[in-house]
Length: 134
Ligand code: 9YT
View 1 (cartoon, helix red, strand yellow):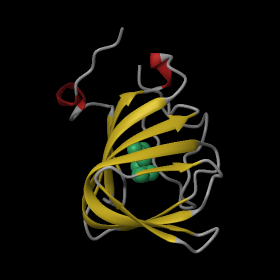
View 2 (cartoon, rainbow, N blue to C red):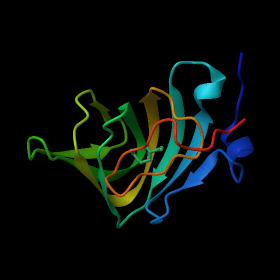
View 3 (cartoon, helix red, strand yellow):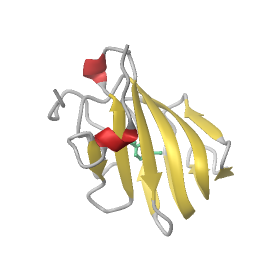
């Protein structure tokens, strides 16, 4: 059994900041934890807009605090996000995330992230090209 607390992750290799400052991703579970998925406690900051296209991953996101919206660029639909909202990108949808009030998100990735991935300029995480957290 793995027991891990956010407090233990903060400020370590598992605490990853977006280079553009839009988010902080605290990686509670990674590939080497052998769960078949990764799980992150992520904060996306108010006033930011982020283009994302997870072409290599499926991602489920559960918002537990804050307010924002997701624009699905495949359909043009905009969905409000707040405490208690889940979205699951089961079709690798390109999207924009716009944040009105810091959003705290529980993010699950399949396949799991391995360590310190950050978005490429095209908004995705590369696979098998990044440093792994041991
Ligand atoms: C919701 C989302 O995709 N935010 C970007 C950060 C990412 N989810 C992560 O690595 O935690």
